[in-house]
Image 1: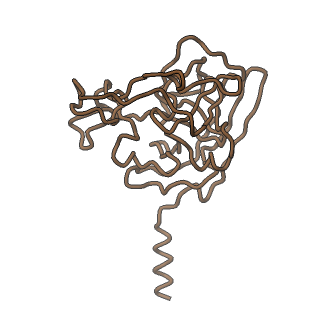
Image 2: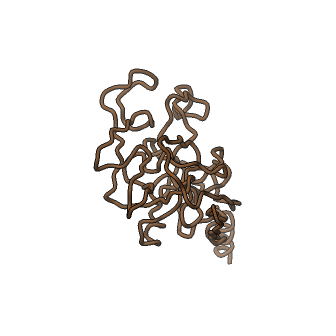
Image 3: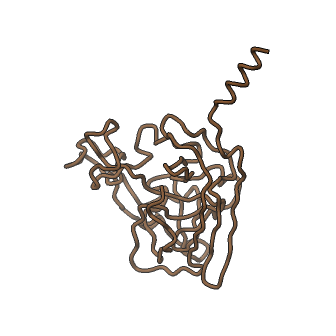
Length: 253
């Protein structure tokens, strides 16, 4: 009996992942001009354990209600994205960047109040801020979100179309698609001195070639312009060529 009581107490104080107790809720609504998404922010697949060593946050219920243009139009110039850039076909949001910047005074050498000229890329950081096997982790507000390829979702959908960007264009994944971004060679001339190693977004530049995607990871597919999640940097597009919906609050975390 004492052994059973010990086991009960041990299980009682284990951190419980909300995903195990709440089901995914995701709905798509169409109007004449808009495509709207309702989601509780809970994925329809297994996640890593949160909190973890690199991420102190629990996954929690969200109230996601956003709309994008149903018939998007591509402009000649793009809009830089720092917050949420799109939504997956399970209601989980895509976020390309982090809120971290080079900060030589911080214990981890980066912080929210660091040098804005040097923004960290999550895949260049040791521990990747607790990313799980879906290239996702949890923000301070409990929002589970993708920073790269949502592996479990791709396997579930078994198709290239996996979401929509904030300007209404589709998001796809094809393994053969590679971005036109390249790691710079040599040493940084300012800021965090040392070799360009991919720790910072500024370590990369857009080279662009005819067989690669544009600056925003976009290209033509089946006769229409779409964005791609890629296996190489930037993985998730950092800019959009259409009119970005005002519903995409860039302050979400």
